[in-house]
Structures are given as C-alpha cells and as structure tokens.
Image (tube, rainbow, N blue to C red; front, side, top):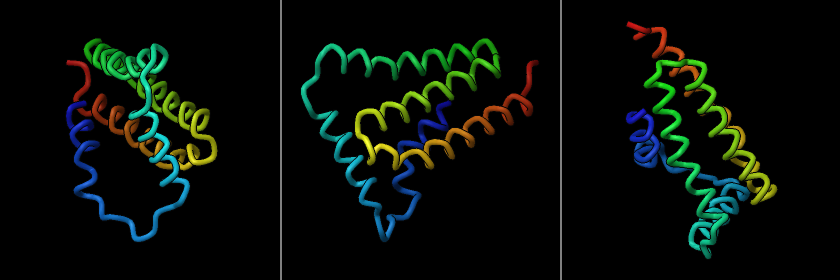
Length: 121
C-alpha cells in the first residue's frame, strides 16, 4: 500500500511530460483545483473524509488478509472517484475514465498477485 501511494506521488517525475494535452484533461484539472481551493462547507469536508476512511478500510481488509474485501474497497474507491468526476465536472470529468479503469485493473491485478505470491501463512 505504501509503495502504491509513493508511486502515485512521484509519478510526475518518472512519466514524461506529454507533448499534447487533451483539452478535457486541462478543464478537469482546473475544475479540481477550483474545487479544492473553493469554499469548504460541511458537505465538502465529509466527502474529503471518505479518503482517509477508505485507506483505513483498505488497511483493515489487508490486516484481515481478505482478498475480496481489499479488491472491493479499491473498486469502491475508484468507482466513487469516477462517479464524482463525471457528476461534478461533466464532460471533462469523463477524461479520467480510461486512466482510472486501467489503474483499477492494474491495482486489482497487483493485489491478486500479492495474495497469491505471499499467501496466507
């Protein structure tokens, strides 16, 4: 889990800067920036709290060594992000679908591999 978080935060250093950026991606990133820097109310605060609670649930799933629960939490996290993106940003929010789904499959595959490789001992 720590490796995934580290890879996410450092990915800007090991992926080359794209030569052409899709306009929807630019609009979506601008929307997210405006959202984060905008006024914070109770709804936004409660929504933001789902992030640490999701990581706690993920940690609990792996603590219990539950493959199904771990993958389930990851799927719910990714699905929630995709739904929020489309629901709030509209068309530009759809620009994250392919990367999010690809990342979801990679994460689930790595989780499955980890469980099979290191298994219950």
